[in-house]
Each structure stands twice: as structure tokens, then as C-alpha cells.
Length: 291
Image 1: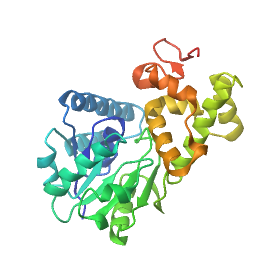
Image 2: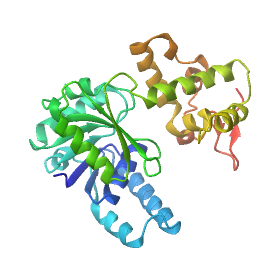
Image 3: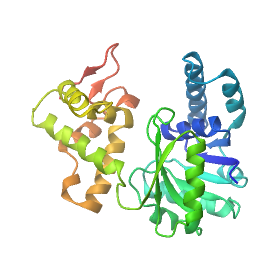
Image 4: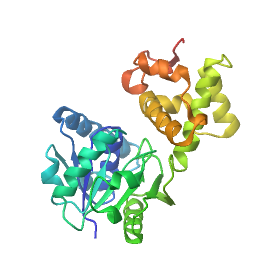
């Protein structure tokens, strides 16, 4: 029985997972060692609640109850000690995830399940950072979490049927559709998304068209809700580059990052979070940035 969920990492994904968990009726503790980051997350969550309320997406009663279900903490050891499920949502770097899993393995109760929110990394490898491989699984949420309907659930080599079923039920209670798949680098969605986004950068690099033209072609021609450049600006160019490097290492040449993407990241053009990526968000209207 899952009642208490701990979400580790208060970035865009972590705070989104905390939101859908609280709205789903769970008691959720959002943990981050950085107090300023936690405060920013709290402000952003309050803003999401208010926007949802004003647009009729969520009732005042649900907002009140959800806010009561949300807690904020900097001490992972204490939070993990009362968790039924820990969802790790830290950056896609093995050393950071390893540190989190070593801590929760030590302090979480024996019945607790572990999930990693990853778009590419191996849940089998991440499970090896602890000693409960049968209770460890990947939950791939999508950005923005409160709007995107899918959670991709990925079983590791030793993930039990019970764990897969429990996590599926948790995701569904959060209001999500699910697919449960077996591990392979990039899973389903990240492999396709990375290919499309990377190819778009090659097209831009080759002068095939402007970012606006390429985005418009993909949206209207292939019925994508967002163009590849709009999407990469949302998820972060650095995050996309990290994913591509991982997939290139595991799956070969077709995932080699476009040089232009690497150049943008080196220039600090990381997308919406930095104010400038493929597009410039520092002006009133979104504009494409000159190469």
C-alpha cells in the first residue's frame, strides 16, 4: 500500500511529479539539499495550482487538499525513513543518482519501492546502486508533468512483477496513462525524440530552413504538438545533449550529437531556463536566435 511518496530533486521534473502525486491523493515530500531551489519549487507549484483553478482544470477543494499533502524537506535521510515509494528525479548523471540510491537504500524501510525518473539511463544499473533490485524500476515522466498524459514504466533485469504492478497503479492514480516495457537504452520515446531533435539540428546546421520553418513543417506535416526546436528549448539543450551522448555510446553512430547542438550548449544557450536556446525568450515575443 503506497501512502507516502518522497520525490528527490526539486527541478522541473521533480516538482511536476510532486504535483501529480499530491493531486492523486498521496502524501508527498519534495526533497532537495538546496533550500533556495525548494522555495522556487514551492512558488512554481503554487502558480500551477492557481492557473489550474482559474482555468477550471482543478477544483478549489482539490487544491486545498493537495497543498496539505505537499511537504518540503532538505534532509533525505529523514524523509526516506517514512517512505513507501521514493522517486528519484535528479540530473541524468550516474554519480548523482548513485549518491541518492546509496542514501535511500540505507534509510528507507524494507517495504519501500524505488523508482528513477530517467529518459535514457539503465534501471538495471541504477538498481545496482542499492540492494533491492526487485523493488527498483524506472518511471519516465514527460515535461510538463502536469499536462503530459503518459508515464513510461521500464522494468530492469530483476524488477519483480509486483513492483511493476504497484508502480503502474501509482501512475494511474496520478492520472496518467502507462506503458510497461523492458529495458533497452533510450526506451521507446527517448530514442525517437532524440533522433528527430538531432536531425532537426543537422537540418538547421545545413541551412535547410529556419527554426520556425522546420518546426512548422514537423507540426503541420507530421501532426506533432510541438516542433523539435520548441521541444528542445523546453526540456533543455544540455539535457538533450547528455541523452544523445549516452545513446551514441550505447547504440552507435546514428545518435552522434549534431555539432551545432554542442556549440549551442557550450555558448550557454540551454533553452527556456537560460532565456535563450534555439529561440530567444528574453524579448516579448519568442524569436529565433541567429546562428
